[in-house]
Amino acid sequence: MRSVPPALRTFAALVAAAALLTFLSAARPAPREAPVKLTPDSLRSLSHRHSETLSDLRFIQARLALAEQESLYLVLDGPRKTLSLELGGVPLRVCALRALRLDRQLERERRSAAFQESAAEPFPLVRREGTVTEHPPPMDVDTTDAAKQWREEERMRDVRFTLFFGRELAIHVTTNADESGGPTGFIPRMKTRWRWVRTSLRQWTGAATNRPEPADLFLLMDRRDALAIYRALPEKTGLALKL
Amino acid sequence: MAEDTPVVGGVLTPSREPPSRRSPWLAVVLIVLFALLASLAVAVFFLTRSATVEWHPVAVAPPPPSSPDTLVREVKQLTKDREKFGRRLNGRMPKDPYILVDTSQNRLYLKKGTDVLREAVCSTGSYKLLESPDGRRWFFQTPRGRFRVLGKQENPIWIKPDWAFIEEGEPVPPKGAPERYDAGALGLYAMSFGNGYLIHGTLFRRTLGMSVTHGCVRLDDEDLEVVYNASRVGTPVYIY
Image 1: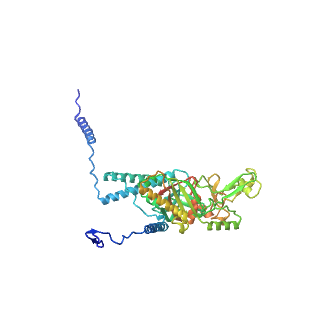
Image 2: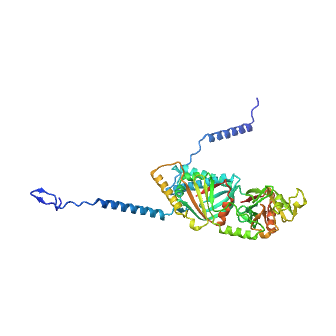
Image 3: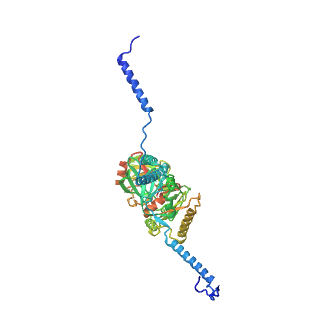
């Protein structure tokens, strides 16, 4: 029987040792990380970051869900005070808001984690009402008087509309600064206040209900922006909201 | 013991004056007054307190209490997810130049990302309804949505559709008739984006900025040349 050459024996021993070492290191449990110690301040800051990041994430998820569809949709970014018209993830028109107001119910609700979570789902548009016609009046190329009249009508038009979304959200858009604080009529104003009292009482008495309370947002924006947005919105669309 | 109670022969006798008894009417008046004041306060509160509040940043409810380790881990995961989804959203933005048409203000933008490379005054659909004697109808609206440049053509020749003759009150010639071919009406360049709609030039420069077309997007020669040269077949066209 021929003896194994010493070089081969050494090589075999090295391979065996390497295999054994690999096995042993894999078998040994990983060193445990030392538990994180945080001061109350840094814990608060971390909690804040958690909420912020979660809110950002849900907003992006809602936008992505809408971007998958082949239609124009709205994106309302509260911190940036913008209302954007987007299509497929591309912002087509970003409108700066001159004012953004919330009713007291929504103001309270938006602080809750449940509201932030629900923002991942876009709000579907249910119906809309407004003083704006769906299209500008038709115009004849050859009639200069008609063109003048058209421009005049457009210029004088009182632009105000409300978009009603699913999950009881309504967005009231006005271009008149006097109306930016909410409804100006006595009855609608009282209705808004009564709703606020009702929900406050409900919360105070702990009477939980599954029916979501309607929430109102009031936007004051440039007339041209409001016209463009109203006329561009298709019947079936949605809203990504960050407040 | 009350000072005004006389003691006669060691026996307590009641005072000669009866104890004062308040009238029940006073209590009623007080209650009514209180109710009135309360109603007034509520009314003042309702009428003066604004039903809405201006948007301001608020602290969102913190996550449910958990160990710092869990919180750190969750924040890391959320940040990672936010970046991932953010990248996915940003990835939807065209990398190359694209065309954006605002029909409400009759403006065309050549953009790359969020940068505007060229802003041009254009003309878009008139929203006019045309009906032919045989009952056919055309609504001249520029379509809204996402399209792509499907074809590019220099010195295009317009093949007039039926409505072009009906609109002028002329008899509709058969398909392929020489009257249907109109050279020069579309300017130097044309880009089609589907269903017969084009971005092209115009002979009617004074109507630029107005909604007067049959659905096409009209530009003046200079802007048209820039947009034509910057786009290729497949360039996205967004119209709203």
